[in-house]
Amino acid sequence: MLSIAKTLFGSLLVAGCLSCAAQAQGLSEPTLDAAHAAEIDARVLSIGHPRDEAIASFTERLVAGLETPRERLYAIYRWVARYIDYDVESYLSGRLMGAGGADNTFRSGRSVCNGYADLLVEMGKAAGLRIEKVEGHAKGFGPGLTTASLQDKENHAWNAVELDGRWYLLDVTWDSGGVDAATRAFVKRSGEPIYFLAQPDLFVTTHYPSAAQWQLLPQPLSFEHFLGRTKLRPDLRRWGVDPSAHVDEHIVSADDMYAFDFGASALRLQATLMQGSQVVSGNWSFQIRTPEGGSRLLLAAPTPSEYRATIFSSPDPQATQLEPVLDYTVQFAHAGRFPYGFPQAYSGYYAQKVELASPLDGRLRAGEPVRFKLRLPDAEKVTVFQGNNIISELTPVDGYYTAEVCLPEGQVDVAVILKGGTQYAGILSYQVAGAGR
Image (tube, rainbow, N blue to C red; front, side, top):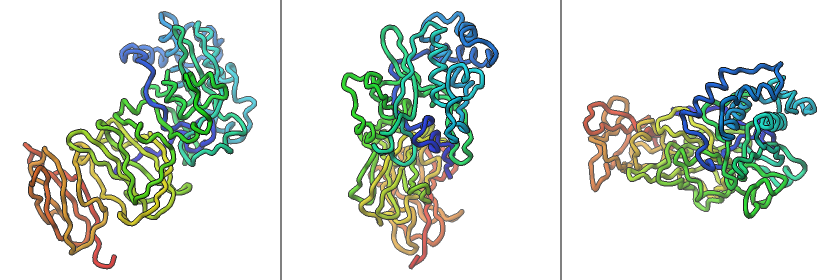
């Protein structure tokens, strides 16, 4: 079984400063080459957090020898993200008066979004950078925000920076980490920054500044349009996910299945459904990746209703830990075609880009003929098993492996031997129910 990462950054604070959404994709341009970024990251790690030093003198030490504004900005950004923790206690209690400010944030090592943004401004000054604090509205994972829920007051702060006469957008709070929805504990992010110098047209899907100038767009987006757009994250294209065909946050499906098309190079994808705060149990999503590179994510539901669909992904097709990257509200007008969801897919299914034509139902009827049909060019043999017993070997016909099979009650698996191999690898699993079940 695939394990989806339990920490949904920002899911606890849906309307709050730590909304860590599936977000605006793509960086505006390459920031630093990997080797140089690694050198600066090592510098950040080694310098530590001397809380008693003045912000200005510490910043000067941090950026000493870094020649370009982009290098100095990266060092400051990475330092703040690493050494400042989100002040969950202050946020949840509503006692925010002492939770911000650059000096307090630096000394305590804790803050809400305002303190993160203030500290970035002050450290930027010391490093000879022009950084502005931007305030506005942000939306993250969880129930959809409405105009009424956001109109009253701003709920987030981030930054803009000027480099070589051009303005860029940053959110060091979201790159610092997120809140575990179950424990309400702050969890640090690791890996490359996601919200560093993000493209404005993508950043605005999750960050809506109160001053329209900070959208950095030639034609500002309306607030209503902001609320209606789905939430994107900046590195989706690097992962091979193109959401341009599904930009609206709310989807109405006239059928009992909805198909997401995220581009030919989309890698590992899976979705979970929620109603209210409850996850709907079962396999309600299924990814089909053709040998030619096409990819679709199928979504179904147990009953006609509205669901929250969170899509998870990873650059690694065989990953066992996926990260949330997209969030939709899907209204199903019908249900019943897949009353028990889709089959369970093993890691080998995703590694080999199997195109499954049928059956797509995760639960089958015992004693009734079932047409198996799938395409896997690298397969030498495709077999249906129950335990160690062979039920049927599929026959190659016109590029597909196919057979009509009557199945016994219980679990059955589809396994393959790849060309040049000798061992079976499981790719799919079905539950077969007796008559009347």
